[in-house]
Length: 183
Image (cartoon, rainbow, N blue to C red; front, side, top):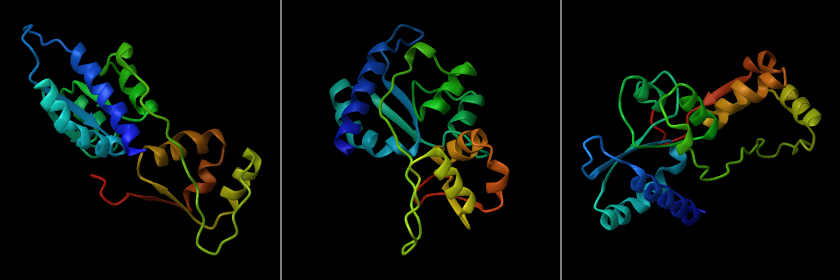
């Protein structure tokens, strides 16, 4: 999977690098890239080849997409920092496009991501084959742990409100920052 993501990320970088024009019409020598944790390994693995092949240096900034931290991509862009390429989850990217930080026509889908669910070791695997069963499982759970990343944010800010269960889950839900994730 990392090879596939690496190829996709490399293709994306080549595409963006070829389309970037400096304001003074001189060739771009540095490409600034903001990305979330999901793509960082792929980008870092292909960066040396990209730089060697194109002669363009990459400045790579790994950050959470949003949040209270000043290093969140949304906050970096709000504060006036510039990025030539932003790679992040689609729903967060669309928000930045709507806010005018990014060009709508430059958006390219790079990958599909899935959210997984697990239960404690020894616990019975719940039936979540229907939305009704999934909702019942969430409501009956003694506790929930969500990652403090875009997937967890999606669940807490979009899916659970759409399911009309946010308030009932809030008291038993803990947000967890995965290891090796910038704060």
